[in-house]
Length: 289
Image 1 (cartoon, one colour):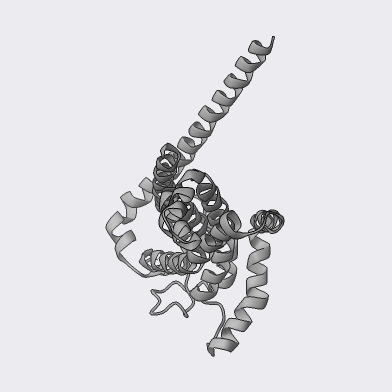
Image 2 (image 1 turned 180 degrees about the vertical axis):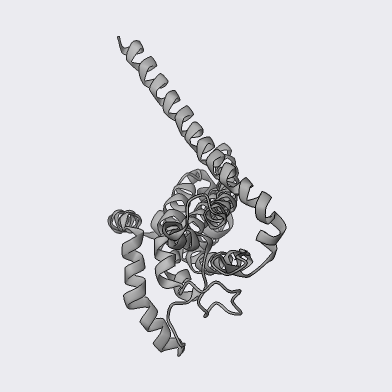
């Protein structure tokens, strides 16, 4: 009886895994179908090579170079903030914090991950953006820098959780051997534990980047939604995800503008797929060590 239950559970898990692959393939197929028709009409070179996004002009212009620049600027800024803070927090939780404090901090990190993105975006728009404007003396606080701050907060739980798991999975003998050879506690952590956990930490960073790239509501609320190539991180920008969310409800179905948004979705899908694929490679390498 127990073996029968185990086989049934295994088949259910197998079916769920296959269905998830099928769903992803169907999503990609749908995006590809709509996007390829746009590329036939407008051209891939004009789409990726132009920085002018004016879908309602005559003739319409669908250059996403400015949207890509905005997405990259916000993502890089968020990573610069979130990666060192996330890794430092993971090191403290796994190696330095007392057990009671460690349990509290892990619960707080999990609570951070549970906060809805629209709530974080609202807080960023109402509280963070005005402070950014006043402290940095800017015309507006809705900038790429504000978006980076908000997205860094959203990416940190992923980076902290996965990095902490990778650090704790390093065999204790590694650190004990380094200490036995005369290394200080910090030297053992930095040169042995951190290096051994590096593939898992890189996977955490890549997954955090994927979280940032795919975020929509929060970034749309705090970045200003200006479709131009920014000269600094303290200017308003528009990201690819924000463009899809802001304009999909206003387009005519089957129009060129409608298909252009699916083309943006296709480009975004490919970027996030590559990021998650690289993260999976590093995660697999970490497990094999």
